[in-house]
Length: 242
Image (cartoon, rainbow, N blue to C red; front, side, top):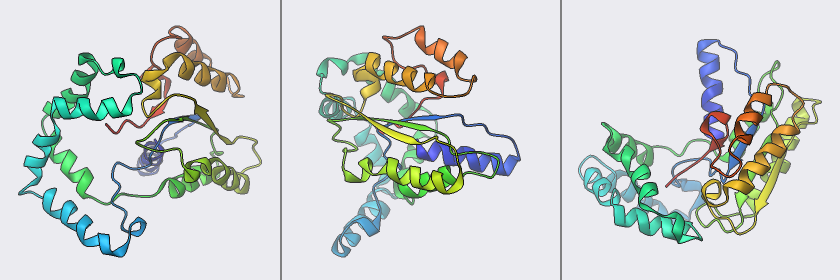
């Protein structure tokens, strides 16, 4: 996600370590875990948002809300609205998604995330990534987006992200590296799970286009499983908000 890159850059500055980001692959990246941006809604809705954020997600009612949401039937209902092919919503997927809810502190993390500030916008994060540092050129970015995504819709703001990033990158570097948006027809929010063969092919094509040799091992690893889900070790960054 955009946030992952910014967090990594902050860690680099704090620890004074070198961080080499050769490239990024983003998939349906919303840019934040919450939608509580007061500037994006009418003024009359601010009290409603505040009531939900500080009352329902507070210490008194938050735990009850969390237990209500961590429900297998509810998660299945949400996923059925995300996946065009309902066959993908099986018991294994539900168990994988619900397993972290049993971790110690999971409830506190959930309430803190959704009651906290939304953080920078996608546009603000892209500017930071593009400007980077004097010794780190803007990395090329491939953005894959499901055409039928209803969770993070493919709107005009999303379509304008590559132009925005390329403008920022051009100001800070002579490199031809840029951001591209590749729309996957028929796919929704979980495109890496819905059409893994298509996603892997797009990622491999992108990796092969990079001028560095550092991606060769990464490309070979992904090629070993062309019909499977992209390997986490491939540094493909995915925002999964379900």
